[in-house]
Image (cartoon, rainbow, N blue to C red; front, side, top):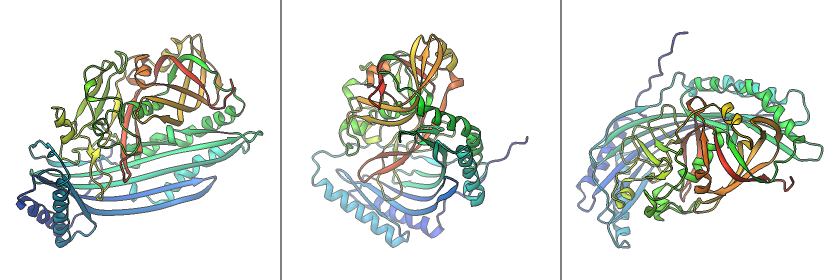
Length: 503
Protein backbone atom coordinates (compact mmCIF):
# COMPACT_ATOMS: atom_id res chain seq x y z
CA UNK A 1 0.00 0.00 0.00
CA UNK A 2 1.62 3.31 -1.00
CA UNK A 3 2.32 5.82 1.76
CA UNK A 4 0.51 9.13 1.64
CA UNK A 5 2.33 12.42 1.78
CA UNK A 6 1.43 14.67 4.71
CA UNK A 7 -1.06 17.46 4.14
CA UNK A 8 0.66 20.80 3.56
CA UNK A 9 -0.94 23.92 5.01
CA UNK A 10 -0.09 27.56 4.74
CA UNK A 11 1.83 28.60 7.83
CA UNK A 12 -0.47 30.78 9.95
CA UNK A 13 -3.79 32.55 9.36
CA UNK A 14 -2.35 36.07 9.61
CA UNK A 15 -2.87 38.72 6.98
CA UNK A 16 0.00 40.95 5.97
CA UNK A 17 -1.59 43.87 7.79
CA UNK A 18 -1.99 41.79 10.97
CA UNK A 19 1.62 40.61 10.89
CA UNK A 20 2.72 44.20 10.31
CA UNK A 21 0.62 45.26 13.30
CA UNK A 22 2.31 42.64 15.50
CA UNK A 23 5.73 43.98 14.50
CA UNK A 24 4.64 47.55 15.15
CA UNK A 25 3.58 46.58 18.70
CA UNK A 26 6.90 44.85 19.27
CA UNK A 27 8.86 47.83 17.95
CA UNK A 28 7.00 50.11 20.35
CA UNK A 29 8.13 47.91 23.24
CA UNK A 30 11.70 47.68 21.94
CA UNK A 31 11.92 51.48 22.14
CA UNK A 32 10.49 51.69 25.65
CA UNK A 33 13.30 52.49 28.13
CA UNK A 34 11.86 50.47 31.03
CA UNK A 35 11.13 47.25 29.09
CA UNK A 36 13.73 44.49 29.48
CA UNK A 37 11.93 41.84 27.44
CA UNK A 38 8.64 41.47 25.59
CA UNK A 39 6.78 38.92 23.50
CA UNK A 40 3.89 39.32 21.09
CA UNK A 41 2.06 36.01 20.61
CA UNK A 42 -0.68 35.39 18.06
CA UNK A 43 -2.92 32.36 18.62
CA UNK A 44 -5.75 31.04 16.45
CA UNK A 45 -7.85 28.08 17.62
CA UNK A 46 -10.49 25.98 15.89
CA UNK A 47 -12.34 23.30 17.87
CA UNK A 48 -14.88 20.61 17.04
CA UNK A 49 -16.63 18.23 19.45
CA UNK A 50 -18.87 15.35 18.37
CA UNK A 51 -20.81 12.79 20.39
CA UNK A 52 -23.30 9.99 19.71
CA UNK A 53 -25.29 8.58 22.64
CA UNK A 54 -27.58 5.55 22.54
CA UNK A 55 -27.83 5.61 18.76
CA UNK A 56 -28.62 9.34 18.47
CA UNK A 57 -26.40 12.34 17.74
CA UNK A 58 -25.98 14.32 20.97
CA UNK A 59 -23.39 16.96 20.14
CA UNK A 60 -21.86 18.55 17.07
CA UNK A 61 -20.30 21.83 18.12
CA UNK A 62 -17.59 24.09 16.77
CA UNK A 63 -15.79 27.11 18.13
CA UNK A 64 -13.12 29.49 16.86
CA UNK A 65 -10.96 32.07 18.54
CA UNK A 66 -8.08 34.30 17.50
CA UNK A 67 -6.17 37.13 19.09
CA UNK A 68 -2.83 38.35 20.43
CA UNK A 69 -1.37 38.23 23.92
CA UNK A 70 1.49 40.57 24.88
CA UNK A 71 3.74 39.88 27.86
CA UNK A 72 6.19 42.53 29.03
CA UNK A 73 8.98 42.35 31.60
CA UNK A 74 9.55 45.82 33.04
CA UNK A 75 12.27 47.02 35.37
CA UNK A 76 11.01 44.68 38.09
CA UNK A 77 8.20 42.38 37.02
CA UNK A 78 5.63 41.32 34.43
CA UNK A 79 2.67 42.93 32.72
CA UNK A 80 0.21 41.26 30.36
CA UNK A 81 -2.49 42.51 28.01
CA UNK A 82 -4.40 40.94 25.14
CA UNK A 83 -6.83 41.80 22.37
CA UNK A 84 -8.94 40.11 19.72
CA UNK A 85 -8.63 43.22 17.57
CA UNK A 86 -5.58 42.71 15.33
CA UNK A 87 -5.42 46.23 13.94
CA UNK A 88 -2.18 48.15 14.46
CA UNK A 89 -3.84 50.68 16.74
CA UNK A 90 -5.28 47.95 18.97
CA UNK A 91 -2.04 45.96 19.20
CA UNK A 92 0.09 49.02 19.94
CA UNK A 93 -2.44 50.05 22.59
CA UNK A 94 -2.29 46.55 24.15
CA UNK A 95 1.51 46.70 24.15
CA UNK A 96 1.46 50.03 25.96
CA UNK A 97 -1.11 48.70 28.43
CA UNK A 98 1.07 45.64 29.21
CA UNK A 99 4.04 47.95 29.82
CA UNK A 100 2.00 50.14 32.17
CA UNK A 101 0.82 47.08 34.10
CA UNK A 102 4.43 45.89 34.45
CA UNK A 103 5.43 49.28 35.80
CA UNK A 104 2.52 49.45 38.25
CA UNK A 105 3.18 45.89 39.45
CA UNK A 106 6.83 46.76 39.94
CA UNK A 107 5.88 49.30 42.58
CA UNK A 108 4.61 46.40 44.70
CA UNK A 109 7.56 44.09 44.05
CA UNK A 110 10.62 43.95 46.30
CA UNK A 111 13.18 42.33 44.04
CA UNK A 112 13.30 42.41 40.24
CA UNK A 113 12.56 39.23 38.30
CA UNK A 114 15.75 37.53 37.14
CA UNK A 115 15.17 36.57 33.51
CA UNK A 116 18.24 35.31 31.62
CA UNK A 117 18.68 36.35 28.01
CA UNK A 118 18.64 33.71 25.28
CA UNK A 119 19.65 33.57 21.67
CA UNK A 120 16.80 34.06 19.21
CA UNK A 121 14.79 31.06 18.02
CA UNK A 122 13.51 30.96 14.45
CA UNK A 123 11.69 28.32 12.47
CA UNK A 124 8.47 26.43 11.80
CA UNK A 125 6.87 23.40 13.44
CA UNK A 126 3.82 21.55 12.13
CA UNK A 127 1.94 18.40 13.11
CA UNK A 128 2.28 15.59 10.58
CA UNK A 129 -1.24 15.09 9.18
CA UNK A 130 -2.19 12.70 6.37
CA UNK A 131 -5.88 13.65 6.24
CA UNK A 132 -7.14 16.95 7.59
CA UNK A 133 -9.87 16.12 10.14
CA UNK A 134 -11.54 19.49 9.61
CA UNK A 135 -12.01 18.59 5.93
CA UNK A 136 -13.67 15.23 6.66
CA UNK A 137 -17.45 15.39 6.05
CA UNK A 138 -19.57 15.55 9.19
CA UNK A 139 -21.59 12.50 8.11
CA UNK A 140 -18.41 10.41 7.96
CA UNK A 141 -17.35 11.50 11.42
CA UNK A 142 -20.74 10.82 12.99
CA UNK A 143 -20.88 7.40 11.30
CA UNK A 144 -17.50 6.57 12.88
CA UNK A 145 -19.10 7.20 16.28
CA UNK A 146 -22.50 5.67 15.58
CA UNK A 147 -21.06 2.27 14.62
CA UNK A 148 -19.31 1.52 17.94
CA UNK A 149 -22.30 2.80 19.94
CA UNK A 150 -24.62 0.40 18.13
CA UNK A 151 -22.14 -2.41 18.74
CA UNK A 152 -22.05 -1.61 22.45
CA UNK A 153 -25.86 -1.59 22.65
CA UNK A 154 -26.25 -4.86 20.75
CA UNK A 155 -28.16 -7.43 22.80
CA UNK A 156 -29.96 -4.93 25.00
CA UNK A 157 -30.19 -5.23 28.78
CA UNK A 158 -28.40 -5.13 31.14
CA UNK A 159 -26.56 -2.54 29.03
CA UNK A 160 -28.30 0.71 29.88
CA UNK A 161 -26.38 3.31 27.88
CA UNK A 162 -23.45 3.77 25.53
CA UNK A 163 -21.78 6.73 23.92
CA UNK A 164 -18.78 7.57 21.77
CA UNK A 165 -17.13 10.89 21.03
CA UNK A 166 -14.30 12.62 19.28
CA UNK A 167 -12.74 16.07 19.39
CA UNK A 168 -10.42 18.00 17.13
CA UNK A 169 -8.40 21.10 17.88
CA UNK A 170 -6.23 23.13 15.54
CA UNK A 171 -3.92 25.71 17.10
CA UNK A 172 -1.78 28.15 15.13
CA UNK A 173 0.85 30.29 16.85
CA UNK A 174 3.23 33.04 15.86
CA UNK A 175 5.70 34.27 18.48
CA UNK A 176 7.77 37.44 18.11
CA UNK A 177 10.05 38.67 20.91
CA UNK A 178 12.45 41.51 21.58
CA UNK A 179 15.27 38.94 21.51
CA UNK A 180 14.60 38.35 17.82
CA UNK A 181 12.65 35.11 18.21
CA UNK A 182 10.24 34.48 15.34
CA UNK A 183 8.56 31.06 15.37
CA UNK A 184 5.52 29.69 13.59
CA UNK A 185 3.73 26.57 14.83
CA UNK A 186 0.64 24.70 13.70
CA UNK A 187 -0.80 21.90 15.84
CA UNK A 188 -3.58 19.42 15.03
CA UNK A 189 -4.82 17.55 18.10
CA UNK A 190 -7.39 14.77 18.10
CA UNK A 191 -8.97 12.28 20.42
CA UNK A 192 -11.75 9.70 20.49
CA UNK A 193 -13.21 7.16 22.85
CA UNK A 194 -16.30 5.32 24.00
CA UNK A 195 -17.92 3.99 27.15
CA UNK A 196 -20.71 1.62 28.08
CA UNK A 197 -22.83 1.38 31.23
CA UNK A 198 -24.49 -1.78 32.51
CA UNK A 199 -27.25 -1.63 35.14
CA UNK A 200 -27.88 -4.47 37.61
CA UNK A 201 -31.17 -5.52 39.15
CA UNK A 202 -30.03 -3.88 42.39
CA UNK A 203 -29.80 -0.50 40.67
CA UNK A 204 -25.98 -0.43 40.81
CA UNK A 205 -24.23 0.30 37.52
CA UNK A 206 -20.79 -0.52 36.16
CA UNK A 207 -18.86 1.35 33.52
CA UNK A 208 -16.18 0.32 31.06
CA UNK A 209 -14.31 2.82 28.91
CA UNK A 210 -11.97 2.54 25.96
CA UNK A 211 -9.20 3.24 25.27
CA UNK A 212 -8.06 4.94 28.51
CA UNK A 213 -9.12 6.93 31.55
CA UNK A 214 -11.90 9.40 30.76
CA UNK A 215 -12.44 7.18 27.72
CA UNK A 216 -10.38 9.25 25.30
CA UNK A 217 -7.00 8.73 23.75
CA UNK A 218 -5.43 11.96 22.59
CA UNK A 219 -2.79 12.39 19.92
CA UNK A 220 -1.23 14.86 17.56
CA UNK A 221 -2.20 13.86 14.06
CA UNK A 222 -5.01 13.67 11.55
CA UNK A 223 -8.11 11.64 10.72
CA UNK A 224 -5.94 8.61 9.92
CA UNK A 225 -5.42 8.09 13.68
CA UNK A 226 -9.09 7.23 14.25
CA UNK A 227 -8.77 3.97 12.34
CA UNK A 228 -5.87 2.97 14.60
CA UNK A 229 -8.17 3.10 17.64
CA UNK A 230 -10.54 0.49 16.12
CA UNK A 231 -13.50 1.45 18.32
CA UNK A 232 -15.86 -1.09 16.74
CA UNK A 233 -13.32 -3.89 17.14
CA UNK A 234 -13.15 -3.33 20.90
CA UNK A 235 -16.87 -2.80 21.51
CA UNK A 236 -17.80 -6.44 22.13
CA UNK A 237 -15.12 -7.05 24.76
CA UNK A 238 -15.94 -3.75 26.47
CA UNK A 239 -19.63 -4.56 26.65
CA UNK A 240 -19.01 -8.07 27.98
CA UNK A 241 -16.74 -6.78 30.74
CA UNK A 242 -19.25 -4.14 31.84
CA UNK A 243 -21.94 -6.83 32.13
CA UNK A 244 -19.61 -9.27 33.90
CA UNK A 245 -18.70 -6.62 36.49
CA UNK A 246 -22.32 -6.57 37.68
CA UNK A 247 -21.90 -10.03 39.22
CA UNK A 248 -18.17 -9.90 39.96
CA UNK A 249 -17.04 -9.94 43.59
CA UNK A 250 -15.59 -6.72 45.03
CA UNK A 251 -11.85 -6.30 45.11
CA UNK A 252 -10.60 -7.69 48.45
CA UNK A 253 -9.11 -5.44 51.10
CA UNK A 254 -5.50 -5.89 52.14
CA UNK A 255 -1.88 -5.44 51.16
CA UNK A 256 -1.03 -7.11 47.88
CA UNK A 257 1.32 -6.82 44.94
CA UNK A 258 -0.27 -4.48 42.40
CA UNK A 259 0.06 -4.45 38.62
CA UNK A 260 -1.22 -1.34 36.85
CA UNK A 261 -2.04 -1.28 33.17
CA UNK A 262 -0.11 1.19 31.03
CA UNK A 263 -2.86 3.82 31.00
CA UNK A 264 -3.11 3.79 34.79
CA UNK A 265 0.68 4.08 35.13
CA UNK A 266 0.43 7.09 32.80
CA UNK A 267 -2.18 8.74 35.01
CA UNK A 268 -0.15 7.94 38.13
CA UNK A 269 2.79 9.74 36.49
CA UNK A 270 0.57 12.70 35.64
CA UNK A 271 -0.71 13.22 39.18
CA UNK A 272 2.24 12.14 41.32
CA UNK A 273 5.25 13.13 39.20
CA UNK A 274 4.17 15.56 36.48
CA UNK A 275 2.35 18.05 38.69
CA UNK A 276 4.76 17.99 41.66
CA UNK A 277 7.77 18.58 39.38
CA UNK A 278 6.26 21.84 38.07
CA UNK A 279 8.73 24.31 39.53
CA UNK A 280 6.23 27.14 39.96
CA UNK A 281 4.23 24.85 42.27
CA UNK A 282 7.36 23.97 44.25
CA UNK A 283 8.30 27.66 44.55
CA UNK A 284 4.76 28.58 45.60
CA UNK A 285 4.06 31.03 42.80
CA UNK A 286 1.26 28.95 41.20
CA UNK A 287 -0.76 26.98 43.74
CA UNK A 288 -4.29 28.23 43.09
CA UNK A 289 -5.42 24.95 41.52
CA UNK A 290 -4.53 21.71 43.32
CA UNK A 291 -1.89 23.21 45.56
CA UNK A 292 1.89 23.02 45.68
CA UNK A 293 4.45 20.22 45.75
CA UNK A 294 6.26 18.06 48.28
CA UNK A 295 9.23 17.95 45.87
CA UNK A 296 11.14 20.99 47.14
CA UNK A 297 14.38 22.37 45.62
CA UNK A 298 16.47 21.15 48.57
CA UNK A 299 15.53 17.61 47.50
CA UNK A 300 17.10 17.89 44.03
CA UNK A 301 19.69 15.15 43.78
CA UNK A 302 18.81 13.94 47.29
CA UNK A 303 15.28 12.53 47.13
CA UNK A 304 14.96 8.81 46.50
CA UNK A 305 11.71 9.19 44.57
CA UNK A 306 11.49 5.65 43.22
CA UNK A 307 13.34 2.39 42.77
CA UNK A 308 16.37 2.21 40.49
CA UNK A 309 14.04 1.01 37.71
CA UNK A 310 12.21 4.33 37.62
CA UNK A 311 13.40 6.73 34.89
CA UNK A 312 10.93 9.51 34.08
CA UNK A 313 11.66 11.96 31.28
CA UNK A 314 10.03 15.18 30.04
CA UNK A 315 10.22 14.94 26.25
CA UNK A 316 8.63 17.60 24.04
CA UNK A 317 10.10 16.02 20.87
CA UNK A 318 8.23 12.68 20.88
CA UNK A 319 6.50 11.97 17.57
CA UNK A 320 2.71 12.32 17.83
CA UNK A 321 2.66 13.33 21.50
CA UNK A 322 0.15 15.88 22.72
CA UNK A 323 2.98 17.56 24.62
CA UNK A 324 5.19 17.84 21.53
CA UNK A 325 6.09 21.16 19.91
CA UNK A 326 8.93 23.08 18.31
CA UNK A 327 9.31 25.84 20.93
CA UNK A 328 7.54 26.75 24.12
CA UNK A 329 5.87 30.15 24.56
CA UNK A 330 9.13 31.73 25.74
CA UNK A 331 10.97 30.64 22.60
CA UNK A 332 12.84 27.76 24.27
CA UNK A 333 13.38 24.87 21.86
CA UNK A 334 11.79 21.49 22.50
CA UNK A 335 14.04 18.96 24.20
CA UNK A 336 14.35 15.89 26.38
CA UNK A 337 15.11 16.25 30.10
CA UNK A 338 15.33 13.64 32.86
CA UNK A 339 13.14 14.36 35.88
CA UNK A 340 13.72 11.07 37.72
CA UNK A 341 16.91 9.16 36.97
CA UNK A 342 17.40 5.66 38.41
CA UNK A 343 14.86 6.63 41.03
CA UNK A 344 16.51 9.91 42.03
CA UNK A 345 14.84 13.32 41.65
CA UNK A 346 17.12 15.30 39.29
CA UNK A 347 15.14 18.13 37.65
CA UNK A 348 11.92 20.11 37.31
CA UNK A 349 9.56 21.20 34.61
CA UNK A 350 10.61 24.84 34.51
CA UNK A 351 10.58 28.25 32.85
CA UNK A 352 13.43 30.66 32.18
CA UNK A 353 12.62 32.63 35.32
CA UNK A 354 12.03 29.73 37.74
CA UNK A 355 15.01 27.67 36.52
CA UNK A 356 17.36 30.64 36.82
CA UNK A 357 16.43 30.98 40.49
CA UNK A 358 18.00 27.52 40.97
CA UNK A 359 20.99 28.24 38.74
CA UNK A 360 19.63 26.00 36.01
CA UNK A 361 18.48 26.29 32.41
CA UNK A 362 14.80 26.19 31.49
CA UNK A 363 13.45 22.80 30.49
CA UNK A 364 11.17 24.61 28.02
CA UNK A 365 7.69 24.00 29.41
CA UNK A 366 5.99 27.43 29.35
CA UNK A 367 2.70 27.26 27.43
CA UNK A 368 -0.49 29.31 27.45
CA UNK A 369 -4.04 28.17 26.80
CA UNK A 370 -4.97 30.64 24.08
CA UNK A 371 -4.13 34.22 23.28
CA UNK A 372 -5.84 35.71 26.34
CA UNK A 373 -3.78 33.82 28.93
CA UNK A 374 -0.23 34.29 30.13
CA UNK A 375 2.09 31.25 29.83
CA UNK A 376 2.46 28.83 32.75
CA UNK A 377 4.74 25.87 33.38
CA UNK A 378 2.90 22.89 31.89
CA UNK A 379 3.67 19.24 31.47
CA UNK A 380 4.93 18.12 28.07
CA UNK A 381 5.23 14.37 27.38
CA UNK A 382 6.23 13.12 30.83
CA UNK A 383 6.96 9.43 30.40
CA UNK A 384 8.47 6.45 32.18
CA UNK A 385 11.14 4.53 30.28
CA UNK A 386 10.30 0.91 29.44
CA UNK A 387 12.48 -1.89 30.81
CA UNK A 388 11.96 -5.49 29.69
CA UNK A 389 9.43 -8.27 29.35
CA UNK A 390 5.84 -8.59 28.19
CA UNK A 391 2.68 -8.14 30.20
CA UNK A 392 2.18 -11.92 30.14
CA UNK A 393 5.70 -12.35 31.56
CA UNK A 394 4.84 -9.92 34.35
CA UNK A 395 1.65 -11.78 35.27
CA UNK A 396 3.49 -15.13 35.16
CA UNK A 397 6.07 -13.71 37.59
CA UNK A 398 3.42 -12.61 40.11
CA UNK A 399 2.38 -15.17 42.73
CA UNK A 400 -0.36 -13.28 44.54
CA UNK A 401 -1.50 -9.91 43.25
CA UNK A 402 -4.15 -7.66 41.74
CA UNK A 403 -4.13 -6.22 38.23
CA UNK A 404 -6.05 -2.94 37.90
CA UNK A 405 -6.95 -1.17 34.68
CA UNK A 406 -8.47 2.11 33.50
CA UNK A 407 -8.99 4.88 36.04
CA UNK A 408 -12.46 5.62 37.38
CA UNK A 409 -11.68 8.37 39.90
CA UNK A 410 -8.79 9.77 41.90
CA UNK A 411 -7.95 11.96 44.86
CA UNK A 412 -4.59 13.43 45.87
CA UNK A 413 -3.61 15.97 48.52
CA UNK A 414 -2.42 19.48 47.71
CA UNK A 415 1.24 18.50 47.99
CA UNK A 416 0.80 15.56 45.59
CA UNK A 417 1.88 13.14 48.29
CA UNK A 418 -1.06 11.06 49.62
CA UNK A 419 -3.39 9.62 47.00
CA UNK A 420 -6.21 7.22 46.23
CA UNK A 421 -7.18 5.90 42.81
CA UNK A 422 -10.14 3.72 41.88
CA UNK A 423 -10.26 1.77 38.63
CA UNK A 424 -13.00 0.40 36.42
CA UNK A 425 -11.95 -3.24 36.72
CA UNK A 426 -9.39 -5.58 38.23
CA UNK A 427 -8.25 -9.17 37.95
CA UNK A 428 -6.94 -11.34 40.73
CA UNK A 429 -3.62 -13.05 40.00
CA UNK A 430 -2.81 -16.37 41.62
CA UNK A 431 0.35 -18.35 40.92
CA UNK A 432 1.13 -16.47 37.73
CA UNK A 433 -2.36 -16.55 36.21
CA UNK A 434 -5.26 -14.12 35.93
CA UNK A 435 -8.19 -15.76 37.69
CA UNK A 436 -11.37 -13.90 38.64
CA UNK A 437 -12.68 -10.50 37.56
CA UNK A 438 -13.12 -8.02 40.43
CA UNK A 439 -15.27 -4.90 40.65
CA UNK A 440 -14.80 -1.46 42.24
CA UNK A 441 -11.04 -1.76 42.91
CA UNK A 442 -9.02 0.99 44.54
CA UNK A 443 -5.48 1.48 45.78
CA UNK A 444 -3.96 4.06 48.11
CA UNK A 445 -0.45 5.16 48.94
CA UNK A 446 2.20 7.80 49.40
CA UNK A 447 3.92 8.94 46.21
CA UNK A 448 7.59 8.07 46.91
CA UNK A 449 6.66 4.89 48.78
CA UNK A 450 4.68 3.63 45.79
CA UNK A 451 7.42 4.41 43.25
CA UNK A 452 10.12 2.94 45.51
CA UNK A 453 8.14 -0.31 45.57
CA UNK A 454 8.19 -0.57 41.75
CA UNK A 455 10.12 -3.75 40.92
CA UNK A 456 9.09 -4.42 37.32
CA UNK A 457 8.28 -2.34 34.24
CA UNK A 458 7.37 -4.01 30.96
CA UNK A 459 9.45 -3.53 27.83
CA UNK A 460 9.17 -1.38 24.69
CA UNK A 461 6.64 -3.71 23.06
CA UNK A 462 4.14 -2.80 25.82
CA UNK A 463 5.01 0.93 25.98
CA UNK A 464 2.48 3.44 24.66
CA UNK A 465 2.32 7.23 24.49
CA UNK A 466 -1.06 8.38 25.79
CA UNK A 467 -2.57 11.84 25.34
CA UNK A 468 -4.66 13.94 27.69
CA UNK A 469 -6.44 17.07 26.46
CA UNK A 470 -7.93 18.27 29.76
CA UNK A 471 -5.04 19.00 32.13
CA UNK A 472 -6.10 22.00 34.20
CA UNK A 473 -3.98 24.57 36.00
CA UNK A 474 -4.06 28.23 36.99
CA UNK A 475 -6.61 30.86 37.91
CA UNK A 476 -8.30 31.66 35.63
CA UNK A 477 -8.25 28.02 34.59
CA UNK A 478 -6.07 26.99 31.67
CA UNK A 479 -6.58 23.66 29.89
CA UNK A 480 -3.60 22.09 28.14
CA UNK A 481 -2.72 19.07 26.01
CA UNK A 482 -0.12 16.80 27.62
CA UNK A 483 1.26 13.31 27.00
CA UNK A 484 2.46 10.35 29.06
CA UNK A 485 4.25 7.24 27.83
CA UNK A 486 4.12 4.11 29.97
CA UNK A 487 4.26 0.34 30.12
CA UNK A 488 2.44 -1.88 32.64
CA UNK A 489 4.33 -1.97 35.94
CA UNK A 490 4.30 -3.85 39.23
CA UNK A 491 4.41 -2.38 42.73
CA UNK A 492 5.02 -4.50 45.82
CA UNK A 493 2.89 -4.54 48.97
CA UNK A 494 0.35 -1.85 48.12
CA UNK A 495 -2.77 -1.12 50.15
CA UNK A 496 -5.76 -2.14 48.03
CA UNK A 497 -9.47 -2.45 48.52
CA UNK A 498 -12.78 -1.49 46.96
CA UNK A 499 -15.03 1.54 46.81
CA UNK A 500 -18.11 -0.38 47.88
CA UNK A 501 -17.00 -1.01 51.45
CA UNK A 502 -17.31 -4.81 51.16
CA UNK A 503 -14.80 -7.59 50.59
